[in-house]
Image (tube, rainbow, N blue to C red; front, top):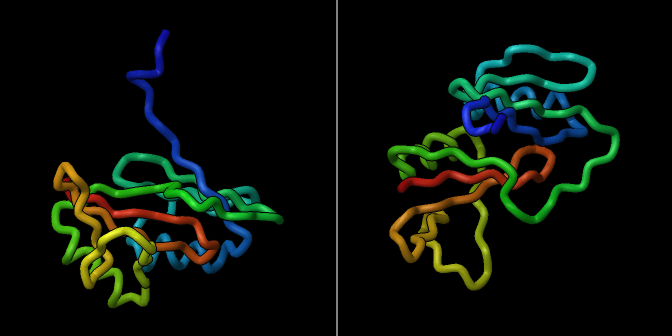
Length: 124
């Protein structure tokens, strides 16, 4: 058996479950499936996202979740209108919206959730 035909479940963590719920549900538009004592469970276009409720969380410096979007500029504008700020990284050439153009012409921008987890948008 291989996992090539199995669905992926994504995980991230929060110490601030109410803020995380509002962020993922209201700002990002994910459908809340369940709010348990252990996790917030969202449907991200058919992929389960479990935002684990933890007592101690130290966000990592790399991207933990990302979305492929059709129009990164309009997506950034929509999220920015909801108060989401996009990251700037020293030494990485980014445009006025924070978009980095990769060597293979993909466009990527990063933002953080209320717990400091790094999330991204990618337009191929």
